[in-house]
Amino acid sequence: MAPRCWRWWPWSAWLRTRPPPSESTQSFRQQFSTQEQTPQICVVGSGPAGFYTAQHLLKHHSRAHVDIYEKQLVPFGLVRYGVAPDHPEVKVGLSGLGAGLWRLWSSVAVGRDVTVQELRDAYHAVVLSYGADDHQALEIPGEELPGVFSARAFVGWYNGLPENRALAPDLSCDTAVVLGQGNVALDVARILLTPPEHLEKTDITEAALGALRQSQVKTVWIVGRRGALQVAFTIKVLGPEGEGPGSQVDGLLLGGCGRAELPGVEEGEPGRAHLGPSAFRAGGSWWCLPPGLGSGVGPRVDRALGLTPPPLPAHTAKELREMIQLPGTRPILDPADFLGLQDRIKEVPRPRKRLMELLLRAATEKPEVAEVARRASASRAWGLRFFRSPQQVLPSPDGRRVAGVRLAVTRLEGVGEATRAVPTGDVEDLPCGLVLSSIGYKSRPIDPSVPFDPKLGVIPNVEGRVVDVPGLYCSGWVKRGPTGVITTTMTDSFVTGQILLQDLKAGLLPSGPRPGYAAVKALLGSRGVWPVSFSDWEKLDAEEVSRGQGAGKPREKLLDPQEMLRLLGR
Image (cartoon, rainbow, N blue to C red):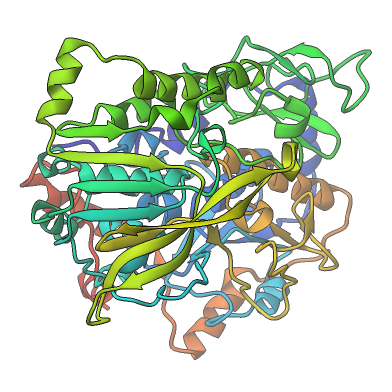
């Protein structure tokens, strides 16, 4: 039987094998264990942010009860519906939370089936971790034409997100254009061009695989407003290609397990320091993450492990090399796009420098004989178009579908973080039959009672505490915006969990017992809403695995919520 995709790192195994806590952590936990109160805590969202927040709370408070609410029928959010099927190693194992008093209640839409205020009345604390389930619109003429999709919807289609199962993109065209040069853009381009036989043993949906087998797409252009030095798919900072345990970085001394004491170093003081396995900051202290997982931190620890992590990369040099060497596919890289880049990358951080060096070699160096032959025989191609900004999606002569994209030629103005791409006045038309917009995800407001910044697409917060709403917290993308990788989310979710526990310890949360799920269950029942439990999910999980066995797949995902409910006897 093929391995299950998202069981690569089981929570329960880490809970059994984690090192003993440091003295400071033991003392911290003891202070909670002596309290009479059993805190009832609610987490909204069962993706990485929700599970990591719950995991931290359960680890550090042995009596905490945590209920996780999920609007989809099945859990795991981004891990199930966002990670590319050909990268199962990225699908962090969220198979459960191991020991502890926690429960999952799926098929419950907070804000519709139950309000946030009702949750706050039932629990001592509520954490909003519901992610970013919308996309940034292009806001250009022609965006509504058939053949134009958000990359988010396209990813949901091939990953089995129920709301996207009927997407049915027309892949009968020769050329596709992906607008945006970030992580998702590279993923969708790779899936479009990967030989279908290389996807047959993944958890891609059978419907998507069938469409890709019939695809006529031969060329994919990945278009960005800025230049090669600003591409957003970059190298992971931690791991074999980047900074990692034992690296010398600018920041604070981190290491060990538990609180990192730093004699003689002022909080936030920069300096050369030794980076330990992983850590995060909460309430003025530095705390370590599970050994071996890394944190996704950047070379400036005091920035990257702070309360507002900077955008972090999701692709390694290995993955970009995989794209360059994709079977049956050749890269189209114009050497002119990389003129002068060799000198400019000398001072950039090492991970980005390695990425640029890889692109430079692919664009400017003469390939070896075997690579020349491989590229000559390739029937498909992908290319990067820099300094181009979409102005209009062009219709076919009959106006019934997309026929191309009009691009404004841009140049960079400003320096540093103030750098921006501005039009030069020149335009060019790029013919295509499929357009995928990949310019970013965004969160939506969940409930009128919850503050929301529509411009930034986040819930206003300080260290995860929602501004002006005591007892309400947030973690993940809805806290910081849709940036970083799964380990970035792990870091910031642990921060939120730690802040919540500190508030509990300080007496800042409601005192006295709270009914928790018992009160919510009664409300939902009166409204005809019947939650799906984790044991229900395990039945669906077993069914998916069974259906995938015949084809040698890790699973065949269930796509129809009504079918899922029938399998559960609903």
